[in-house]
Length: 208
Image (cartoon, rainbow, N blue to C red; front, top):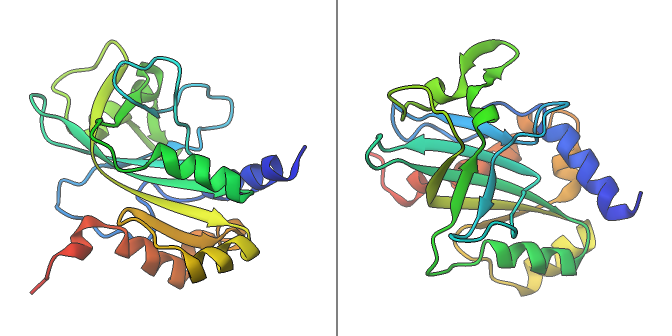
């Protein structure tokens, strides 16, 4: 197993312990419906992925992916929070390009097996019900436009320090040392939770 694969494995092992709502993110409304799409459950091959319209082969499979379902049956959408572990600068450049601002709409594909499965071991509610956007049980994969996205990149410490000194992130990008993601109980880290909270669109508004 190479170094990048080892990092991915360790990060995904930690992210599997994270809750259905990204830790630190506060609800934008009482109807928020966050669901964890990746990492997938043990033994499950069905999990959401991202793609561009008309593309059936070039899929983006983030190490971590949370979807917040919104809208209604006539105009549904998702907001997404993604996490990418980057073992090298080249890997970072490749992953950043997949989330770069574009005139194309990014799409989130939710496989039917994932939608019909329960939210989690302690919540037997089917995901399609928990999403709040379906009037009845879907019978096929569902593709939804991504309205808003935030991406958290985990970088090796030397890469993180160099990037923080010399680069300017896009508005949807956030960065942490990768060991922060791999730490035990990383979802309880106050500094990480505060960073994720700032990754919400609600951070752009004044709350009186």
